[in-house]
Image (cartoon, rainbow, N blue to C red):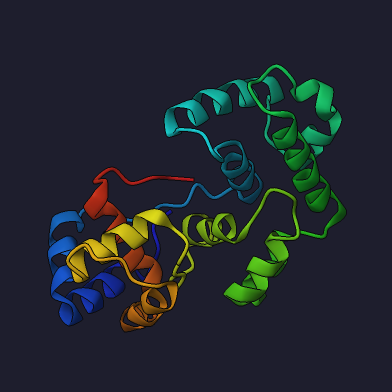
Length: 205
């Protein structure tokens, strides 16, 4: 699923910012895409923490094959023993269990999320063990396609901004936050294009 706002956002960013204009011209034939399944997206993000993309894909493949279906109820059914041997650390197995419990209990209810603003939803998601602010922000961008998320702690975003706008010189977190204001209300889109400047192949979560 491609965001309905993508063309408008890209055009507005390009018209206001020469760097964005160049990136939109180079990567305008591709866009942010959502996988659609909230639970599977969050499970994938937990599995991929602190390992390479290639390793994460391999572990995900074994995990999905073991599970058969990646659903909260299935995770509860399998339990920690059922998930061992897939390449998951004990801690990640615990995180997946906590995520599953939050979905099964209704503490995390995707049907309610449309009514929550970004910060309120980030607060809800970070109640789950193993989900920090960065993971929650990636979820808002890649799954929910929220248009104005600006993940200040993302290393790729920092690097791209510093390279394109500050001649490679690092700036403080506050400076980065202030600088990002120019891209409202499309900071997710600006971030996506800045990521493309470092890696032309888009990531999907």
